[in-house]
Each structure stands twice: as structure tokens, then as C-alpha cells.
Image (cartoon, rainbow, N blue to C red; front, side, top):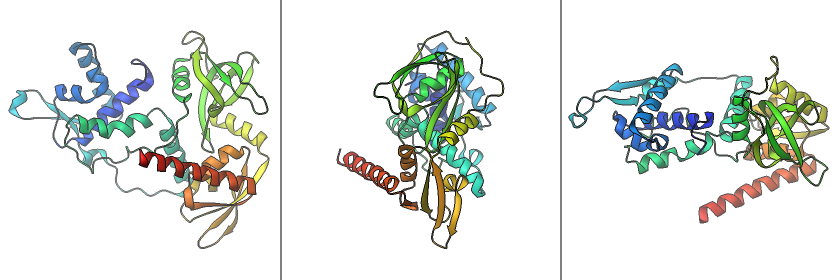
Length: 330
């Protein structure tokens, strides 16, 4: 669990509250909600829980989530119950253009890598353990993807939100040992399935981009919160894109099934658009990152060239299959 007062902790708490109130078929009194939502259960006293719950109710309503109060059984006297009706929360059927689907794909990837992934993945088990009667059709739009998270994401996000300088060990390509970096975090952006930190490198006195998967060990804070400012027009995605464009030296030929691979299509040239497969010319800079991204599409994407990228994708898929087999045997 994240630090109690961090932005990530609040996000986890709100997520658990939403899922609790969506999952129940009957309104829940505050006392029952406190038993089920772990962060409420750990509140030091009833007064602290009451303050936290009231703030969270207002936050949900400001976000447009239709939390309602309803009368419940006489056993709870005059205390109201709380729930979120799926009919009010759910969206109607939506249709998206290919470029819109590409944006949604990035959002889904962010969800699966961010600090929400673990609480969302375990919420159902917590609710069943708490004895809440399930409504299996209620989860519209809140089921996350299951994917490996970057350990550095949560502390860097906290540092970015609080404008706190950080320090970490960074593995540089072509160097045997990681180097210590002290950074003012400016932003986080994702590209080709990888997360990147943008910021000001204090030791080099220059803007830099860092790939989170290359951060070794723990991210440490090395200064006071609010001790610097992010440049007013900073664009993390553009900064990462410029760095990646400068590094792009390779091109792959890949085939994608119709209606899939929207993020790949958005940054590729179409070579052949046949009935069963679309062949793309895909530029890339990092073989490992690209192989991981392509493997995430499973059999909807086939790599024709180059051979080393094809082999790396196959190795990723074989590793994922072996991991699933081990989990199934556990």
C-alpha cells in the first residue's frame, strides 16, 4: 500500500470505494463501508474515518461519479446507505475512429503500468472476503489490464506531484555500472510501451529523458517539496518524442490483423493493405522495448523483418507462456 497521505494512496482509496459501491446490490451503511475498504479500516479513530469519507464523497461527485444515498433496513435505524447505480455510471455504446483507439490504447497501457493496477486487480478478492454480495455486471470501464509495472513509477509520480527532487541509479546503454542521477522531475510520458521521465539533470545542468526500466533500485527524495518549478510550456510527450526520433535507426516490417494494432499504425507507413493483414513499415530505436510492445499484441501481429527483432518477440512470448504455466501450477 502507498504512503497514507500520498496522491497514490488517495487514488487507491477512491478506487476501492467506487468498486465497493458498484459491486453491492444493496446500499451500504458507513460502518460496513469502513469494514470493507482497507484504508478506512486502518483509520486511527472514527473521527478520522468520518473526515476521510466525507472528503471522498465530495471528490467522487466532483468527478461526476453518481454516488447516491438510499434508505436501508431498520436494523441500521435512520442511517442512510450508499451505493453507485450501474445504470447511472455506465456509458452507452461508443464507437471510435482508429486514431481515437490509438489514444485509448495508450490510456489503457498507462492504467496497467500505474499504481492503480494492483488495487484494481485485488479489489474483487477484498470484496468477497468482506462478504459483499456481488453484482457481476456492474464493472463497466473499471477492469484494468494486467501487466508488469515499473517500480520507479509510483515514487516518481509522487515526486512530480509534490515538486520534490529525486535521486536514483540509472543504467546507461554501453556502460557496465549504473550512474547516480539527481533530477528535478518535470513529467512522465509513455512511448512504445515504455515509461519515460523528463526532467532537469542537476549534475549535468541540462534537460534529460530517462527510461524508467533503466532505473535500478529505489528512487530517493533529495530535497524539499515545492523546491523547484516545471517550465510553463513543458511537453513531456514531445520531449520524449524528440529524443526517440534522434535515436531511431531501425525499421521493421510487421503484419497486423484488421482492427488491431492501432498504436502501431499511428506511427507507421502502410506497405500493403490486404484483406487479412496490413503490412506496416515501423521505425524503432530500442529493440528490447519494441519487442515487448509487439509481443503484447500476441497473434494479432507478426514480425517479418528484421530477424533479430522477430527472435526477441518470440522470446518475449515464450517467457510470458512459461510464466503463465508456473502461475497455473502454483
